[in-house]
Length: 291
Image (cartoon, rainbow, N blue to C red; front, side, top):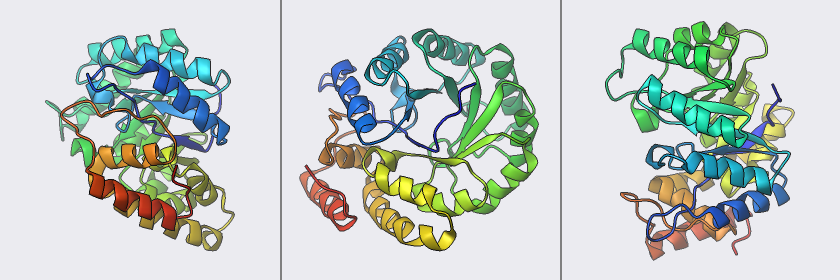
């Protein structure tokens, strides 16, 4: 398996006003972020509106990213409530050239039923043609994958890592301690990048890397907690403003810094002009140029 970089953006997915996937904008965004120094991308994750994607759109996202950045590490999100659906999405990503899959916890009928969730991931791993990263994002799903379930799944040869977006550094330390050596934990909460990194995480996969990649990189690359404090504080202040408005806030920040984000797929809606000004001010305060 190729080793992923320490910082990857949970990439926004651009749509037209009619709600169609804008492939040209997506290719342009990947190329722009590669120019900014990023060498890996998470496609079709929560920030990429993965639960709203339709059949064949993952293929288009992966193929477009591969054209724009041939050497990049591509981790494709999987958001399915059934084993059959998850495997179909993974096959789509694998056929297009993805390096690995990031599989979201199923919740609709199994929320809190840890045995069934564990079995879902084990069945996915048994059949997946790609390496599997677990994905726990309780702020979106209302369900946090238990540490003991993570430890059990991490023993599977195909399960190579995890994105944990809960933002709890003690939990991160427990995951690192209980997983086999080489298990790749990524923090997904921008406010906790420094603490999660100090707890043993390999790096960060964040929405903020769409618009503040250099700042996220400074936090991840800091050699001590004291060195990470100032960039983490700036990042925290910035995301407090941006993430108050959910995914549309992230899209607005990305747009203000030069990406072509289009229009969120409904039911999501763009932020208001007033909110956009607030986000622009927060970017400026963080030292990030607004275009």
